Image 1 (cartoon, rainbow, N blue to C red):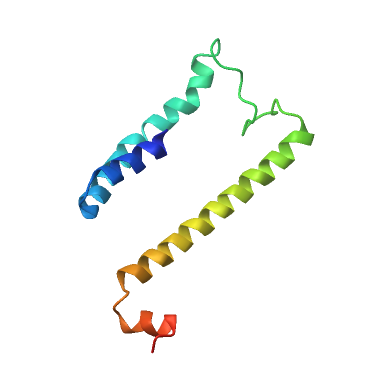
Image 2 (image 1 turned 90 degrees about the vertical axis):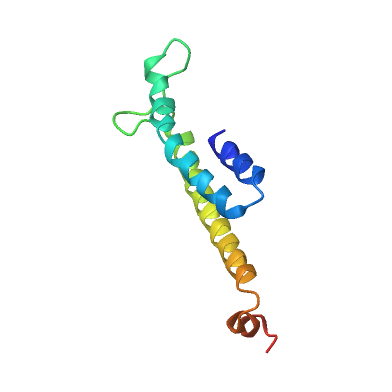
Length: 109
């Protein structure tokens, strides 16, 4: 939900520079909420199941499910990083589309 809020805020502005600043402030303020979400499992244990994956101690999930889960989490982060880099490259090319280096890179010169 935090990510969707940032995307919605960015799309609400017509001025993209102002939208980027507002999203940066929201992201910095929103990081306060992340430890609260994480610790809510321990604080309100009657409402939540215990954490399945623990960084310290033994995890509640069986190893036959833990290792594929960790592999898929790693693969997802890798895919996310790839998509972010591809989007950054496309944004840079679009921003500098009139530059000579972009025309050379695209094969127009």
